Length: 50
Image 1 (cartoon, rainbow, N blue to C red):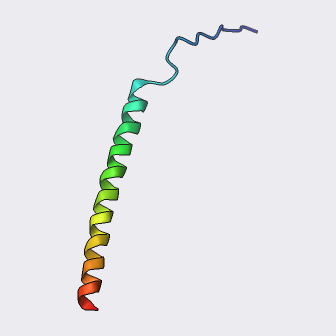
Image 2: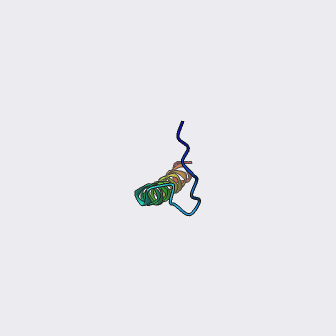
């Protein structure tokens, strides 16, 4: 059985994984902002209808 030594200095993840995660986080933040604006508009309309 062959054992390979562990090199902690070697990168474990591909850089594209980190980039994709960052893009996902930004996209989620943008979606949250749109949801907040929609919720605020609905709240204003409910007040006006009341």
